[in-house]
Image (cartoon, rainbow, N blue to C red; front, side, top):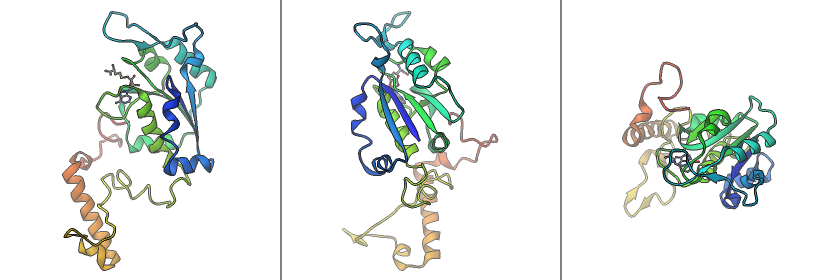
Length: 239
Ligand code: SAH
Protein backbone atom coordinates (compact mmCIF):
# COMPACT_ATOMS: atom_id res chain seq x y z
CA UNK A 1 0.00 0.00 0.00
CA UNK A 2 1.19 3.53 -0.75
CA UNK A 3 0.55 6.44 1.63
CA UNK A 4 1.06 9.95 0.28
CA UNK A 5 1.25 12.87 2.70
CA UNK A 6 0.91 16.47 1.60
CA UNK A 7 2.33 18.89 4.16
CA UNK A 8 4.22 22.15 4.61
CA UNK A 9 6.48 20.35 7.13
CA UNK A 10 7.87 17.27 5.33
CA UNK A 11 10.68 16.88 7.91
CA UNK A 12 8.01 16.18 10.52
CA UNK A 13 7.68 12.61 9.20
CA UNK A 14 11.34 11.64 9.61
CA UNK A 15 10.74 10.26 13.11
CA UNK A 16 7.37 8.55 13.42
CA UNK A 17 7.83 5.74 10.89
CA UNK A 18 11.36 4.68 11.72
CA UNK A 19 10.57 2.33 14.58
CA UNK A 20 8.76 -0.91 15.23
CA UNK A 21 6.26 -2.64 12.96
CA UNK A 22 5.83 0.26 10.53
CA UNK A 23 9.58 0.51 9.92
CA UNK A 24 9.81 -3.25 9.44
CA UNK A 25 6.87 -3.23 7.02
CA UNK A 26 8.50 -0.41 5.01
CA UNK A 27 11.78 -2.29 4.84
CA UNK A 28 9.95 -5.45 3.76
CA UNK A 29 8.15 -3.49 1.01
CA UNK A 30 4.62 -4.02 2.42
CA UNK A 31 4.06 -0.28 2.42
CA UNK A 32 5.56 2.90 1.10
CA UNK A 33 5.23 6.39 2.60
CA UNK A 34 5.77 9.29 0.19
CA UNK A 35 5.90 12.70 1.84
CA UNK A 36 5.31 15.67 -0.49
CA UNK A 37 6.09 19.33 0.24
CA UNK A 38 3.00 21.42 -0.54
CA UNK A 39 5.25 24.33 -1.53
CA UNK A 40 6.37 22.35 -4.59
CA UNK A 41 3.00 23.34 -6.07
CA UNK A 42 3.32 27.10 -5.51
CA UNK A 43 4.56 29.33 -8.32
CA UNK A 44 5.14 32.72 -6.67
CA UNK A 45 8.48 33.96 -5.40
CA UNK A 46 7.54 33.47 -1.74
CA UNK A 47 6.04 30.01 -2.29
CA UNK A 48 2.83 31.16 -0.58
CA UNK A 49 0.50 28.48 0.76
CA UNK A 50 -1.73 30.61 3.02
CA UNK A 51 -3.94 33.68 2.95
CA UNK A 52 -6.33 35.66 5.18
CA UNK A 53 -9.90 34.47 5.71
CA UNK A 54 -12.71 36.30 3.93
CA UNK A 55 -14.98 38.02 6.43
CA UNK A 56 -12.11 38.69 8.80
CA UNK A 57 -11.01 36.79 11.87
CA UNK A 58 -7.88 35.36 13.39
CA UNK A 59 -4.99 33.80 11.55
CA UNK A 60 -4.46 32.37 8.11
CA UNK A 61 -5.89 29.53 6.03
CA UNK A 62 -4.26 27.15 3.55
CA UNK A 63 -5.18 28.37 0.06
CA UNK A 64 -6.98 25.98 -2.26
CA UNK A 65 -4.77 26.27 -5.40
CA UNK A 66 -1.58 24.47 -4.22
CA UNK A 67 -3.63 21.64 -2.68
CA UNK A 68 -5.75 21.14 -5.83
CA UNK A 69 -2.67 21.31 -8.07
CA UNK A 70 -0.78 18.82 -5.91
CA UNK A 71 -3.58 16.24 -5.77
CA UNK A 72 -4.35 16.60 -9.48
CA UNK A 73 -0.72 16.13 -10.45
CA UNK A 74 -0.10 13.20 -8.06
CA UNK A 75 -3.37 11.54 -9.09
CA UNK A 76 -4.53 12.70 -12.54
CA UNK A 77 -7.18 9.99 -12.21
CA UNK A 78 -9.05 9.01 -9.06
CA UNK A 79 -9.96 5.35 -8.51
CA UNK A 80 -12.30 3.59 -6.10
CA UNK A 81 -9.41 1.92 -4.28
CA UNK A 82 -7.80 5.29 -3.47
CA UNK A 83 -9.00 8.07 -1.20
CA UNK A 84 -8.00 11.67 -0.56
CA UNK A 85 -8.37 12.34 3.16
CA UNK A 86 -8.41 15.81 4.67
CA UNK A 87 -7.31 15.73 8.31
CA UNK A 88 -9.63 18.11 10.14
CA UNK A 89 -11.02 18.66 13.64
CA UNK A 90 -14.41 18.95 11.92
CA UNK A 91 -14.17 15.54 10.27
CA UNK A 92 -15.86 12.25 11.09
CA UNK A 93 -14.12 10.39 13.90
CA UNK A 94 -11.41 7.99 12.81
CA UNK A 95 -11.85 4.56 14.40
CA UNK A 96 -10.71 0.95 13.97
CA UNK A 97 -13.50 0.27 11.44
CA UNK A 98 -12.21 3.14 9.29
CA UNK A 99 -8.65 1.82 9.67
CA UNK A 100 -9.82 -1.60 8.45
CA UNK A 101 -11.64 -0.04 5.47
CA UNK A 102 -8.56 2.01 4.47
CA UNK A 103 -6.32 -1.06 4.79
CA UNK A 104 -8.24 -2.56 1.84
CA UNK A 105 -7.30 0.36 -0.43
CA UNK A 106 -4.24 0.55 -2.64
CA UNK A 107 -3.32 4.19 -1.92
CA UNK A 108 -4.29 6.97 0.49
CA UNK A 109 -3.44 10.65 0.08
CA UNK A 110 -3.51 12.56 3.37
CA UNK A 111 -3.83 16.35 3.35
CA UNK A 112 -2.43 18.09 6.45
CA UNK A 113 -3.95 21.43 7.40
CA UNK A 114 -2.11 24.15 9.36
CA UNK A 115 -2.79 27.61 10.83
CA UNK A 116 -6.55 28.18 11.32
CA UNK A 117 -7.39 25.42 8.84
CA UNK A 118 -8.03 24.96 5.13
CA UNK A 119 -10.23 26.73 2.57
CA UNK A 120 -13.56 24.85 2.73
CA UNK A 121 -13.55 24.11 -1.02
CA UNK A 122 -10.85 21.51 -0.34
CA UNK A 123 -13.27 19.59 1.93
CA UNK A 124 -16.15 20.08 -0.50
CA UNK A 125 -14.54 19.41 -3.88
CA UNK A 126 -11.11 17.79 -3.45
CA UNK A 127 -11.17 15.42 -0.46
CA UNK A 128 -13.17 12.18 -0.51
CA UNK A 129 -13.38 12.24 3.28
CA UNK A 130 -12.81 14.73 6.09
CA UNK A 131 -11.40 12.86 9.09
CA UNK A 132 -10.72 13.79 12.71
CA UNK A 133 -8.59 11.76 15.13
CA UNK A 134 -10.49 13.02 18.18
CA UNK A 135 -12.52 15.80 19.70
CA UNK A 136 -9.65 18.19 20.35
CA UNK A 137 -7.79 20.73 18.23
CA UNK A 138 -4.22 20.02 17.11
CA UNK A 139 -1.97 22.68 15.65
CA UNK A 140 -1.60 20.76 12.39
CA UNK A 141 -2.73 17.69 10.48
CA UNK A 142 0.70 16.00 10.57
CA UNK A 143 0.27 14.19 13.91
CA UNK A 144 -3.23 13.14 12.84
CA UNK A 145 -1.91 11.79 9.51
CA UNK A 146 0.76 9.83 11.39
CA UNK A 147 -1.95 8.33 13.61
CA UNK A 148 -4.00 7.23 10.57
CA UNK A 149 -0.97 5.76 8.78
CA UNK A 150 0.18 3.85 11.86
CA UNK A 151 -3.27 2.38 12.57
CA UNK A 152 -3.77 1.33 8.91
CA UNK A 153 -0.22 0.06 8.36
CA UNK A 154 -0.35 -2.50 11.15
CA UNK A 155 -3.49 -4.05 9.58
CA UNK A 156 -1.80 -4.71 6.23
CA UNK A 157 -1.17 -8.38 5.42
CA UNK A 158 2.14 -9.61 6.77
CA UNK A 159 2.86 -6.54 8.92
CA UNK A 160 1.97 -7.99 12.33
CA UNK A 161 3.83 -11.20 13.14
CA UNK A 162 0.85 -13.18 14.40
CA UNK A 163 -2.02 -13.34 11.89
CA UNK A 164 -4.57 -13.18 14.69
CA UNK A 165 -3.16 -10.34 16.70
CA UNK A 166 -5.33 -7.71 14.98
CA UNK A 167 -8.48 -9.79 15.58
CA UNK A 168 -8.20 -10.34 19.34
CA UNK A 169 -7.24 -6.81 20.32
CA UNK A 170 -9.25 -3.74 21.33
CA UNK A 171 -12.00 -2.82 18.82
CA UNK A 172 -11.48 -6.19 17.12
CA UNK A 173 -14.12 -8.85 16.64
CA UNK A 174 -15.79 -8.30 20.03
CA UNK A 175 -15.98 -4.53 19.48
CA UNK A 176 -14.85 -4.01 23.08
CA UNK A 177 -11.47 -3.53 24.72
CA UNK A 178 -8.68 -6.10 24.92
CA UNK A 179 -8.33 -7.96 28.22
CA UNK A 180 -5.77 -6.87 30.83
CA UNK A 181 -2.41 -8.63 30.33
CA UNK A 182 0.40 -9.45 32.76
CA UNK A 183 3.99 -10.62 32.55
CA UNK A 184 6.53 -11.70 35.17
CA UNK A 185 6.92 -11.33 38.12
CA UNK A 186 3.73 -13.09 39.26
CA UNK A 187 3.93 -11.05 42.46
CA UNK A 188 5.08 -7.44 42.10
CA UNK A 189 5.05 -5.39 45.33
CA UNK A 190 2.27 -7.62 46.60
CA UNK A 191 0.07 -7.11 43.53
CA UNK A 192 -0.54 -10.62 42.30
CA UNK A 193 -1.33 -11.69 38.76
CA UNK A 194 -4.89 -13.14 38.70
CA UNK A 195 -4.73 -16.83 39.59
CA UNK A 196 -6.45 -18.29 36.47
CA UNK A 197 -3.63 -16.88 34.29
CA UNK A 198 -1.05 -18.79 36.37
CA UNK A 199 -2.84 -22.14 36.54
CA UNK A 200 -2.45 -23.16 32.89
CA UNK A 201 -6.06 -24.30 32.38
CA UNK A 202 -6.79 -22.93 28.91
CA UNK A 203 -10.59 -23.00 29.17
CA UNK A 204 -10.35 -21.11 32.48
CA UNK A 205 -7.92 -18.59 30.97
CA UNK A 206 -10.28 -17.92 28.05
CA UNK A 207 -13.21 -17.47 30.45
CA UNK A 208 -11.22 -15.14 32.72
CA UNK A 209 -10.03 -13.05 29.76
CA UNK A 210 -13.52 -12.69 28.32
CA UNK A 211 -14.92 -11.59 31.67
CA UNK A 212 -12.02 -9.23 32.47
CA UNK A 213 -12.27 -7.61 29.01
CA UNK A 214 -16.03 -7.10 29.44
CA UNK A 215 -15.53 -5.61 32.92
CA UNK A 216 -12.84 -3.22 31.73
CA UNK A 217 -14.94 -2.14 28.73
CA UNK A 218 -17.92 -1.48 31.01
CA UNK A 219 -15.76 0.51 33.42
CA UNK A 220 -13.74 2.65 30.97
CA UNK A 221 -15.67 2.61 27.69
CA UNK A 222 -19.36 1.88 28.33
CA UNK A 223 -20.14 3.63 25.03
CA UNK A 224 -18.65 0.60 23.21
CA UNK A 225 -21.31 -1.67 24.72
CA UNK A 226 -24.20 0.10 22.98
CA UNK A 227 -26.12 -2.30 20.73
CA UNK A 228 -25.20 -1.98 17.01
CA UNK A 229 -27.11 0.68 15.09
CA UNK A 230 -29.87 -0.51 12.69
CA UNK A 231 -27.81 0.49 9.61
CA UNK A 232 -25.07 -1.92 10.69
CA UNK A 233 -22.53 0.89 11.10
CA UNK A 234 -21.03 2.10 14.37
CA UNK A 235 -22.72 4.91 16.28
CA UNK A 236 -23.50 8.35 14.97
CA UNK A 237 -20.41 10.28 13.93
CA UNK A 238 -18.41 7.16 13.09
CA UNK A 239 -17.14 6.53 9.58
N1 SAH B 1 -9.96 26.25 13.05
C1 SAH B 1 -10.05 24.81 13.03
C2 SAH B 1 -8.80 24.16 13.63
C3 SAH B 1 -7.58 24.30 12.76
S1 SAH B 1 -6.23 23.45 13.45
C4 SAH B 1 -11.26 24.38 13.84
O1 SAH B 1 -11.58 25.03 14.82
O2 SAH B 1 -11.87 23.36 13.49
C5 SAH B 1 -5.14 23.32 12.05
C6 SAH B 1 -5.12 21.98 11.34
O3 SAH B 1 -4.79 20.95 12.25
C7 SAH B 1 -6.43 21.55 10.70
O4 SAH B 1 -6.60 22.13 9.43
C8 SAH B 1 -6.27 20.04 10.63
O5 SAH B 1 -5.57 19.65 9.46
C9 SAH B 1 -5.41 19.73 11.84
N2 SAH B 1 -6.21 19.22 12.98
C10 SAH B 1 -6.51 19.86 14.12
N3 SAH B 1 -7.22 19.09 14.95
C11 SAH B 1 -7.40 17.90 14.32
C12 SAH B 1 -8.06 16.69 14.67
N4 SAH B 1 -8.71 16.54 15.82
N5 SAH B 1 -8.03 15.68 13.76
C13 SAH B 1 -7.39 15.82 12.58
N6 SAH B 1 -6.74 16.94 12.19
C14 SAH B 1 -6.74 17.97 13.05
